Image (cartoon, rainbow, N blue to C red; front, side):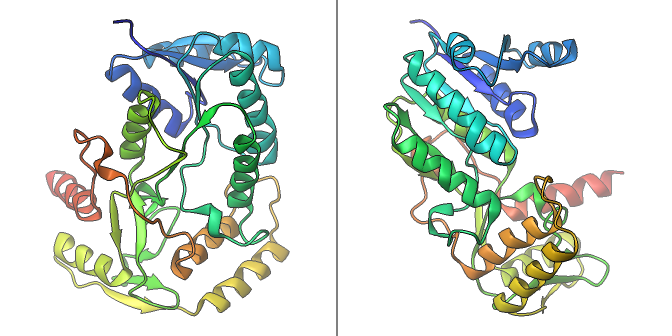
Length: 304
């Protein structure tokens, strides 16, 4: 039985490289799209991932279609603003259709953006706009929604304040939040890319917990007492976002401070909460919990 061939766009990015490795580990032949203006280091990076680099013009339909031809699924792990998420992905989508590729996985990888009001979250607005475009295309499309990346906890999403041993929250310390590690998202995406029976949307979460729960996890894994700390309401967070966008708009940045705050607001409001989860769809997968993540971090710190 021939190995499936999967085309990956964005294979040298953070999530894209993880998806590519996971596909290769599962025996897939991976064709990684490389822009024709990329240097030789990009080709080498793709080869080191175990994939075949295919150079194409990302703005040209027929160049991209030729790069996709003969594959079983196109997986997008592209990251950017409108020129990438809408414009470049649209070329990729149309190219997959033109090449006769049966399936397409867009670069969604987020909370449930179908429920956010237009204009409230720039990056989620772009994904929703592309979803409308994808739904009109004659190809089987599967969006993967995974909440927030667990890897961002304490980093890009700084609700954990270790110096004062507090976990920040807006509105309610009991609002449930969805988190999944990038590696788990990559493994699930690889399984979905190899699965010809996927539905329009798949939802996964490595863990779903509240700030109150998170404080308990930190207390257990660090041996120090952490407590929730209220810092305002959803409305006050919205006002902060508006003020920061005025002071430092950073229109060209993919993830400026106010964008992260928009996502935090949408999580604490509950509007991007995932619904029925598909974690059990691929029984061999084991998802990392927040407690697993911080237990491992504590063990690694103790070893040093």
